[in-house]
Length: 282
Image (cartoon, rainbow, N blue to C red; front, side, top):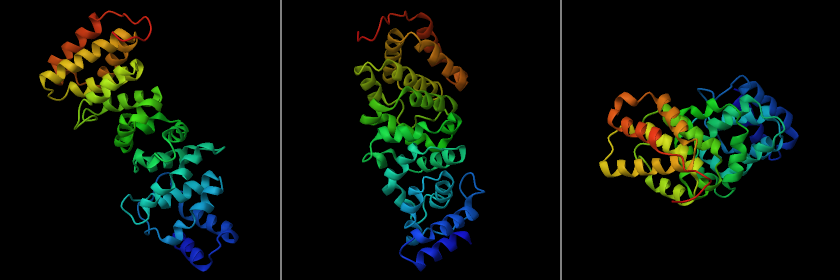
């Protein structure tokens, strides 16, 4: 009902500013009790989309959260596609003084229903600033962000600008989901690019993600040789790599499903000498 009140107000007057308090009250009555998205909602109308400038300019995390509840209820609903047209407003939320757990959760859910390419015009650095406001890393372990994060890390800009935090999150996601990198395991093109750019720390986490998947799927022999070679390379260049990759594999608990591959990995981690001495290419 509160949702319909907003529509009625928007239909009544072209200028929404005089009705700011009433519209925000309708949103608060209808959605403030939701920490995520409501299970049932009326389809967004052009009237509701007119509220976007008013809501986001309020800088009120409660009002913005209420509107995100209405805006993002279903990915297939009419009006949801307009979310990708307002990425500039979304990334600007990173500058809010207050960014509580409710808004963090709502922004996370919104990102999970978008593509990283939606943010190309505003720049991935601004997207990262927004994601950095999500303090609870447990949120990132939810499946909603899987494809978004994988595609972002694999993009040419994302590979350069995403900090280690998100490579580690991707690796931990892989450790908890053996199908994380399917169907294009193990993304050897990305591995080769990271090697060429001497990104040994990022490659450490990515190889950890690859191994947690390798231990539970069939990998052709030639591909396995490439994975082993890249693992030896990153262990030589990053003294922390053996521990990081080993810990991820333990988390995944997939050793029993790929004993042959597990033995190869164990041999690399135990016997490959550390010749790091700073970043360099063999």
